[in-house]
Length: 566
Ligand code: NFE
Ligand code: MG
Image (cartoon, rainbow, N blue to C red):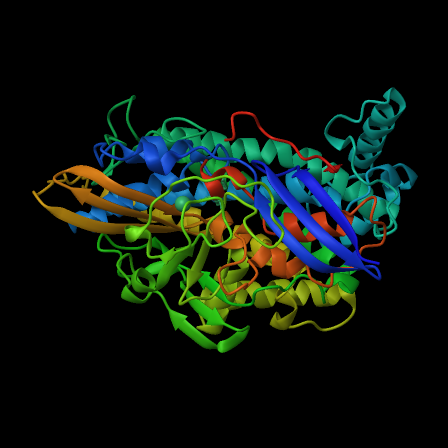
């Protein structure tokens, strides 16, 4: 008989996500994804000055702190047809790439590694053998027997104290945990080191963005990062080199630790490669633009339908008609008034709570659709649309990574394995490596441009009478983010955010098509319904952010707790 499992809240994510599954004969047969909070940020923007919107919407989230700011200023610039100076483009690229390094590192180690890594098993590891294992895949100087012995001691002390701290309440000893003790000890050591490297990324972001979380250096029309090489208080060579050194250190960690760990975990869990594909329609947008007009970019954009790489269609620049015309959101199964699917410019956000109805409404998330189809967004989508278009950096990076996985797994694997739970981790690690290289490349482009004497950072916006519509999009760490604005006589008439975690965590639509989280859970094995580790594996692989997805908080924080999964 089918068994119902409710996990509420899912932790090690941002925000409040509830997942329900039905399990029959050890497999998931039905799934529901539900965002459990409401804040209403889209609503409070009405009537405000479009130049202020980015400061409000950036508060949607404390994780992807920069991305809503960037999408917002781009939406206003798009509505006005306003170009920004090259320096502003490059400084924004530094902000987005450095933020992304922080975000991807935090996701793998703090938010998802413990789904695969058994901390308690690390106590059985031999530090010398652990160092030999680590040396066989990486040259990282942190991988010494002494370091691993110290980490083992630290974990033993935590276990003895009964206070596991960040390692509390996970599914230790679960039958689906398959790594040998040495791999577990290596990963725990890297978990702790990751804390230092995510901090370094944050420091670099604080220097370029003025503050972290939530950068302060954007503006409709450019950035407010004044450049003056002879002034201590502005962006100068000293600050630029501080940023570069920090990014180089973080890049070293990503290449020698994070990417290697993901390749090793993926290879050692190759039994998991068939699970978690779900929705294989993919959407990503171009980003990391190389010129003021945003005509060329270093990150690829496009769509793929039905998992067929040959179906790829490009999305180019910041004013792409194919993207602009084909996005809609459906509220048929969400807690809003109405039953429509509408283009974001035409939408409203009018909450109407009903309680959780399996066959009716069950979430605060709207269901975004592209040409009526659910789309998976995120690093995997971006790697696949790049791969399918022969985007040089993507093809090289993905092939090199798959080579490492094949070597560790002892079988040759190709890009088809990427349509999976593990594939989402792999794609994110590959993207982190690319973003590290791109952060340094765009740092170089900025220094070169400043060296030519160009110090421009801002083109002032002018708001004409009448109505203008715009969209600002950006490839955030969790995928394609778009902000849609309607301006009337210089004030915001409508503002809608269509967010990566809304694309992925959104519900069914009027046609009953499942959202990507829901679809990816189907057929996942469940070894022990009391401890649904496998559900966490697949859901965490998307890097959920429900604060972003609903941009909305039930002040009572209603809990329907069945399982607390930590
Ligand atoms: Ni709050 Fe976010 C990202 C956005 S949500 S984390 O990345 O936008 O998907
Ligand atoms: Mg929205």
